[in-house]
Structure formats: structure tokens, C-alpha cells
Amino acid sequence: MTMQPRDVTADKVAVDPIVLQIVEGTLNSIEAEIEYAIERTARSPMIREAHDYRVGLFDRRCRKLTGRSYSAMPNAVVRDFPVETMRPGDVFLMNDTYLTEGSIGHLPDLCSTVPVFHDGEVVAFIQAFGHHDDIGGRVPGSMPGTATSVFEEGLAVPPIKFYDQGVRNEAAFTIIKRNTRVPEMLAADLDSEMQACLMGARRMAELFARFGKDTVEACFQAILDKCRDIFADELLPKIADGEYAWEDYVEHDGLTDPKLHKLALKMIKRGDKITLDFTGTDPQSAGPINWPADYADGAFLIKWIAPILRNLADTPERAAEIDVNEGVCEVFDVIFPPKGTLITPEWPAPTNARSFVLLRCLGLLAGTVAQAVDGRVPADQETIRYTGFFGVGRDGKPFLSREVLGGGSGGRWYADGNDAIHIVPDSRNQPAEFTETRFPLLVEKLALRTDSGGAGFRRGGLGYEKHYRALVDCRTIVTADRVRLGCYGVNGGAAGQPFCVTVDPDGEARRLGGLVDGEPVKAGQVVRVVTTGGGGWGDPLLREPELVARDVTEGRVSPEAAREDYGVVLAVGADGVAVPDTKATAALRDEIRLRRAAPLPMIDRGPGFQAMLRGACKPWTRTS
Image (cartoon, rainbow, N blue to C red; front, side, top):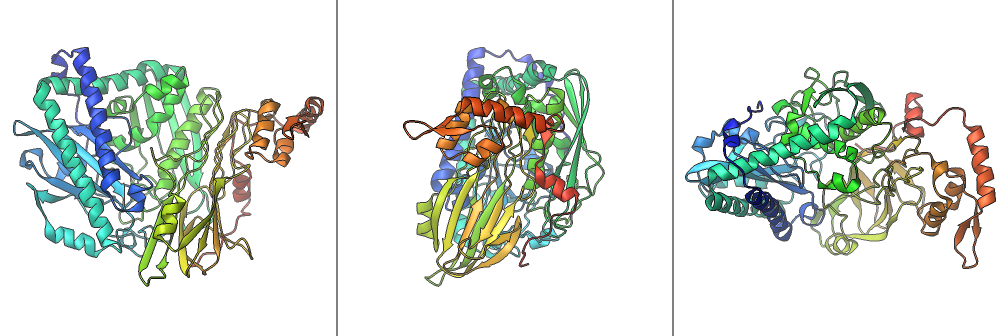
């Protein structure tokens, strides 16, 4: 769906600044209220516990109004169901990755759309999508790492009218429930999301009733213009006009493992406009890492990666104030390569692990911008990993446990990276108590992963280390990126440690790959998951020795890494706490500097990248 031209009629209505503030605050409150309602009423662990769901508010022309979180888009619904045919009480459902105008990346993300009415006409849309635990397909969890087509990934739903003026389509509901391994849970989740959106639509209608259509729409336009102007006037001037290029890679696709799958970007900056040219990106993969992004003029991709430029704000506090809504699409143009690449795949190429490419696009833009601003962007963090178990519990009933685990964020010029966060806003790991209550698993360890953050003047954040002991014979499933290529370091900082899963580290550990459809786990065996650390920022030899000593005391950095990576020699103080030996540290750092054969690179990809270039990486154990 092509982006519609700017509605100049909205500009003719004067916007009272107080009313604008009320409207903007109300939109944020509606979005938060919908998300809170879903959290309180959904049943699946992925949504209720992990918070892998999002809400979006849009104007009548499908433009996203809020910047609190990312979301899908209603464009495909409007394409198939003209607004003049919509009625109060209608609810639309979709998840087809190729028929949703770039809104949905993989089938577990079922998306509900509700139109908002004022004086009998559609004036806005409310949307919610959640990552549901299972929507059918070859593997429990609907994310087969060895899928070769979308037909193996689950039930695909093009935009359909799920509720017609408040009456549910029971035939469609029956089909959807029949195609999932967790029908009661999925049914409850859909009810939760749709009812929350209907509640949000009532809240939005109250806003129109209070101020009138012309005033509210004028406020909508002002909100979008504000975002556009902040990027055009405040952020883009930090980048000198010119062309900048960068490449990043996904290192496996479940089938041709190991292989570097290239994503290419040329950024062209001219005045208050940036063009993103993805020409040169590798052909679509046989495995499920493809992401159909080339729809709606790249609107979803733009809104997804544009927040990277917030790092160019004068202060971190200012960056945190900048929301990203549809207004940012006026600042960017996107040039996609022809059909048949990783970001322009052709149906029915599989897409369930599309998050690898989606998240690499964030790092791809950051790496490109880093060259234009002398490295003044955070180091890399953008990776994702789903883990889980399935089988039959001790009660004789099948079970499916799914979890999204966080990792460390990249170091920044002004601060270390954060530990164990996730790209999904407000998400969290599954509490051990919940896991042990619901599933035949024991969580024996949950801790930060020592030394996982890349060394730097500002250290990368740490990833998780989580151990699960199986209480029954079962299988583990893994969908994870960055299993060989650590999150890159910037401006002399080192790459972070990559992701890894091993089975039974108490015996002969089996190391698994990043796309695993069902590795057998015997009762009593332990599955050890360690997640990625963020990349480091700046030369590690410039890090204050006192901070390194503190990191060692807190267990974030080992004594060995303090010496080898940071050149810090530690002694034991009177209170038993590590303290730097100032004279020995200065001597060791001078020695390390003399050993360096070349200046530190602007971007460090870590040893895994060189190993893959040499062809030294071999496939890990795979059961399917």
C-alpha cells in the first residue's frame, strides 16, 4: 500500500498548545491502558509473562501516532476492507507475512485491528499483536529452524473480518483453534487482545467526542510534524552530507549452516533527507531467516530502525524524549533490491526467524552512521533468542514452554551498556517460580554472564546465564542469532561474547546451534543457555582502573579479563576487595600498546567473523 500524500486540510485548523498536550497525553494513556489490559487478561506465557506483544494507535490514514513502542500497521486491512464498509463492533484479524503490507514478520504474531468511529465514520484504528505460543506448523512453537517454506510454519491468516458488528465468525475461530497445539490458551489470548482494542477504541472515540474531529485530527498532524521536524532539524544535521556504506551478516539459516548471509546498506544523506539503499543484499535464504520488508514504501522498516538516530541527540536525556511515529517516514526514502533477497523474499519463502534480519537492520544502520559521526553511536546489541521445551509432563499431558531471553546492550560514549535487556520494550525473562510451577523443569541458575560484555572504555552490558534441568524426557527448541558473530564493538571497543546453548554440561556437553527444532533432552540433564553480551565502546586501555576493579569485585569481569583485555593489574586491599596496582597497570598498558600492530578498528566484529571468513566454522549437532 503506497503512503498517502500529506493531508493539508488538517493544517488549516489552529492547534491550541494545551489541547495538543491533552490529546498527546491521552493517546499515550490509551496505548498504555490497552497494553496493561492485555497483560492482565492474556493466558500464554509469551504474552503475559514475557510481554512479547505490542499496541499501536493510528489515524484514519493508517499513520502511527504514538512512539511508546513499535507495532504492526492497519494498511492491509484498509486495502481489503474499504473504510466505508466498516461498522462499529468490527474486528479484523491477520498474520500472513506476505499479505499484511510488511506489518507481520512471522506467523505467531496474530494481529487484531479495530476501527474507531465518530459520527458514523472511521476516524482512527487501534491495533494489537502478540507473539502467540503456537499457531500450528511442523514444530511446537511454530518456529521450525529448518523450514523451507511458510507452509511448514503454521496457519497463515490473510486479513479477515473476525467480528462483524460485534458477532464473532465462529467458523474462522474454530479453524484457528483447530490449528494450534494450545487451543484454550490461544483462544483466551485473542479474546484478551480484541477486547482490549475495543476498549481502546471507546477511549479514542471519547477523545473525538470531547474536542471534535477537526481539532483532534489537527492535533494528530501536529504530533506527526513534531517527529518529522525533530529528525530533520535536530538529528540529521549531525550527519555530514555524503554517502556511507556498511555490511552486516546473519551467520546461519538452519539449512546451509554455516554461511555469511550479507545485508548491505548505502546511506545517502542530503540536507534534511536520508536515502537507505539496500541494493547488494544477498539472495533470499532457503531457511527461515527472510524478512518481507518491501511493502508500504518501507514504512515499517523506517519506523523500526529510525530510533537509531536518536543517539545523535545532544544528551541521553534528550534522546529519551524523542518518540518515533509515522512522521519520521517523511525524512527517509528506501530503495529495496529486486524481489528475491533477504529483505525482499518471494512467497512462499519461510520467515519464522525473520528477527535475525530485522534486528541486523538496526545494527546495519548504526554501523553506517558510526562512520559518519566518528563512532558516536552505541556499540551493537541487537540480537534475539527464543528458547523452549516441549514434551509430555509427569501428568501425562503435553506441555510447551517458550521464553525470550535478553542480552547485554552496547557500550556508549557516556556509559557502560545495560545488562540483560531485550529489544522488545518492557519485556522480561520468565520467572523461575512460574517456570517450575507450570512445566516439568527446574531453573538451577539465573545469573549475569561474566565477561560476556565486550571490553571497552565503556564496557558492553552482560548477557544471561540460565540453567534448566529437565524432570522428564523432552526436547529443546532454539531460535537464536549471534551464535558465532558477537555483537560488534565501536570506536576501538571489542565485540561481546556470542550466544551458546549446551546440553548436560555436567557430563559430555553437546553444543547446539542457533536453529534447533527438537534436540532430545533426557530427564535429569541440564540445558545451559548463555546469551550475548553487548559490544564495547572505545579503547579498553582507557577505562578507569577503579571501574575495572569494581567490575571484578561484582563478578562482571574476571581477573584474567581485567589483565588481558583492560591491562589492569589487581591487588587485594585491606578489606579483601580488589584494587588496581597503579604502577603495574601503567606498565602493562604501555606494553599492550606496543604490541598492537595497527590502530584499533572503528568496528570490531570479533574472532567469529574471521573464523567464518576462513571457513573454520562447522555445523553443530542438529537433530532435524
